[in-house]
Length: 244
Image (cartoon, rainbow, N blue to C red; front, side):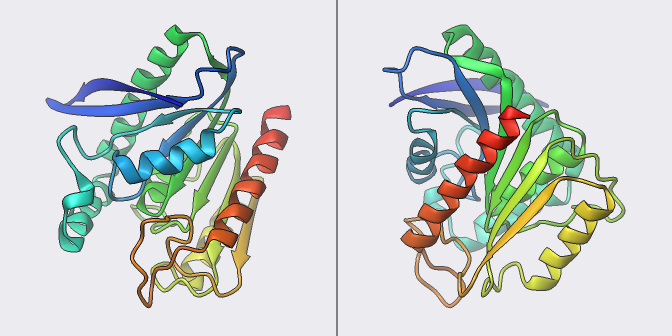
């Protein structure tokens, strides 16, 4: 696996995303635009990206918080404040995601290993919310997959749902961070907009079940079995989505 850092700027701020791929594979592969959780780009989230990428995908990981963010060293309150700043400014959130994809996909195209005709988004926790907000704005991706999403509902009430691709949400039934009522509202939104969607609910799953580095608390717990199942479902879903 190789990691290539890619810098870009938006509204006078510097950001640095990363491209993750297996450089031993020379044939072009589908691209997955990844929104990490509130820790942003760092060792823990890159480890997740490497697992998803495998030999089949090129991962383009967005930086939503700034090049010097270092989310792994921040307190819970600081992380929550960073997420809130994006959630309360949907226009910037969408612009930042758009800029990240433009910069990362442009660089990936130069490397000659990315099949940019096959594009999907994935997001973890808060990053799932960012990915969905980007998709609602009409971003052209074949699929969006979110794991234990923190903010599945529109950041601003009455935001039109212009999601173009299919949607898969993987969630724990016992997740207190995003309770069932929020997921039900999300399902209603997708159904009303006639999106091709699936929500898979894992019995007893807590928040962050696909984060091997998360602390075990009453709200969060890594679950290797659920995570393995999630990635199996994701690959099948993406194969179907790319096949049309």
